[in-house]
Length: 160
Image: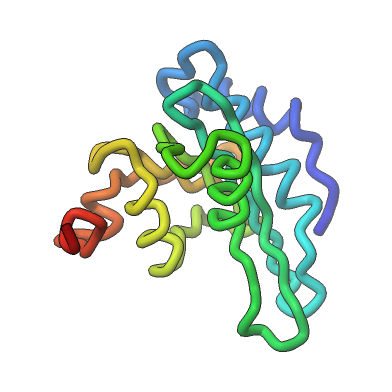
């Protein structure tokens, strides 16, 4: 993956108005965490660097990247590693307020089905938005809330 000048990328995203309501710079921090994590991804097989930055209800930002292995079945996706990091630091009651995913693609790339389920499990509500950004800072991100990502989903409430 080519090096991304993160401050320059974020400044272009802001210039194009793609951060929306960047309250207290938290979405910028999430995007910065996602890109930095993507640059550290261990993906020697797919060469597909993915980064995620999530914001918790306590206003903390955690990043995560994809980590592959030669067997493929033991891979960790960026969303999973970000959620795991947040749980390590905040405990099992950690809740996501918002998530940003960054991929080195021409268009924003949505989270896979397994990651959508994991996000739903740890989201503070069905209104939590997951923003997908791509390598081109002039391309608008796509944002979908949990209900849109995983309609009529199965979750913890179904087994109580």
